[in-house]
Length: 195
Image (cartoon, rainbow, N blue to C red; front, top):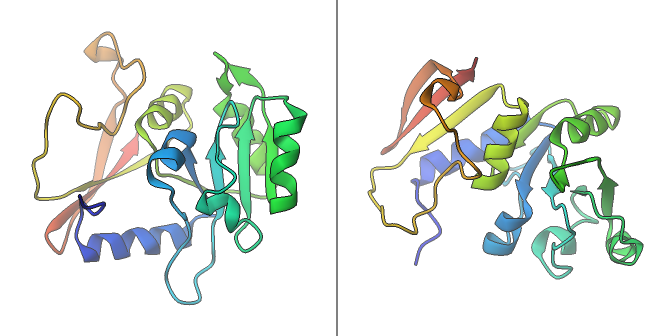
């Protein structure tokens, strides 16, 4: 019923965080589910480059990211070589970046290399769960910000922050070091460094 889980102050902090990064990235499933804008809504904010990790070019041409690509720089990273699909995005202002494949998906190491060549030197990953897992698995994550809202949802169909295959043994878990804890309104922000 409501798209807001965290409170207003935590959401404002996310806007501040977006302002600090060169780019912000989500997976195509987040685009399909939420139709996000991925811009910083702070006045006079530096706008991050918006990146969609979309292996098969499923991003709808009528989504907000594509429709505002001439206003906010937007990149779709894909492994698709379907020129007809690729060419549909270009007149709308979307840059399509064809990357190497890893398990039929965008190789995130290759994507990061290409982003670096484009002078994009920092990347905020806002999910979803499949992309979060892939990013952790590929070793490209060096920091985790975890917001905790005072709400319990649960359920068998509940969304989780990390999807994918998961780990087989607990000693294979990604290990974190807590750098700080902050109360933001009614929410808590945990800031971790990835080992």
